[in-house]
Image (cartoon, rainbow, N blue to C red; front, side, top):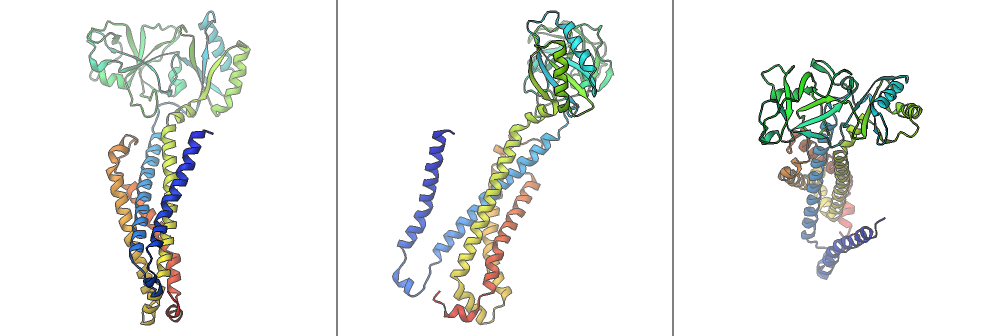
Length: 431
């Protein structure tokens, strides 16, 4: 518990209570004894309360529009295809610092894991996916000059054979790596082909890396093309990417990807046990599933949608309670008037229309102001949305309808009470 935060909340609560008791207290001091004796009431206080409720409804509408757009944006993001078999892969980040003959050790580890029931395939990579970071290069076709637009525009990863099938990526042209391939071979994704080989067969072409303004020398021969995937996160646009064979583990750490026919969570303990039989001191820096790693990249959007929805619901509750309280108070204040209307022939339906018109005026003005505010906040909200317009019609319509329903429910109680007022009793009361 943070003491300063707690103190701030206490002071804000006290200040809020003080501010909202000053207005009624001042209103009491302005009451005229003569008006009390004559049971004359001013409509100024009622108009002020109506304005307050309309403001609450406007804020409620604004928050619900934001909540709806953030929730729909999160749904769009969560349902975005990653290009990976996200529900079938468990990932293990291993550290081989200090291990001698790392390639032989990794082969032995993979062979042991492949013997586990439910394991479909095992592959390694120098960089894990969906981790908000990666390795980049200025890669272009050999003989082409590197421009400013090419600077760090291509993702790079070193992977083992069967990496693409393990991760659920399709070979769309050429072939996968084999154990005989050297780092002089490369597999590129479809985005790389679209950018650099739009009208040329990429197979057999060479690519290279160079500094800006320099001509790239031939370094890697393209032997295959794989399907596009998201790399760092679901929000990250699909970028050009090339892969080379992972033949050594000089960096010390690598990612072990285990594809399984069972839920990946169930394979974590067996893989740990299998790794312990190969090396009891093998450290796993991170253990996860690809599905969780994908979900973690959407955590900020999930939190924003949840908080906005919570604030929207609370605002709707406050607006509903405020509307009910104001209408109930108004009916009590106008009891004599309603009694007189019914005494001279007004029907219960006429009384309901009277209450409904008051409710409609507050609700309509509040909803209109809230929708206008949400529309004005579009440029700010746009940066938080994914695959959705800041003026999404469905979110605006849903918020308006929901607030209208809340106001309608709040008006039912006072409306029913008003229809049950007996003219004789109302005329005899003091007001």
